[in-house]
Image (tube, rainbow, N blue to C red):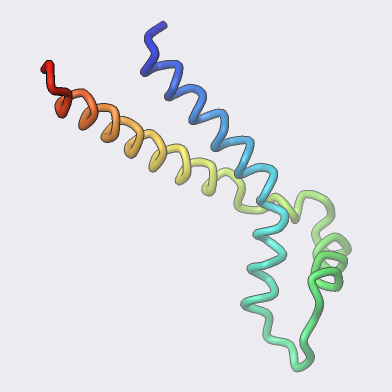
Amino acid sequence: MSSGMVQCISGLNAAIIAATLTQPLDVVKTRLQVGKTAKSLTYTQVAKELYITSGFRGFFRGTVPRITTITLWGTVLSSAYEYLRHISRKDY
């Protein structure tokens, strides 16, 4: 397996793990930002309300689109970087 392929697979795995681990925090943060309540809620209160209304799965709502976006952008940027690094070598 080429080093470029190993880098691509490693990057995809890192993106999937990072998106999955941070998704619950992002869901609660987004609910805090768009909440339309008269009183200001704390992070814990929003997380508790989310768990009561949607269960554990509610914390991972939107994970697939987020992983898709991160992996597509990561693949494009990594490929562009490797291509530019290859063509800018002095011995090319």
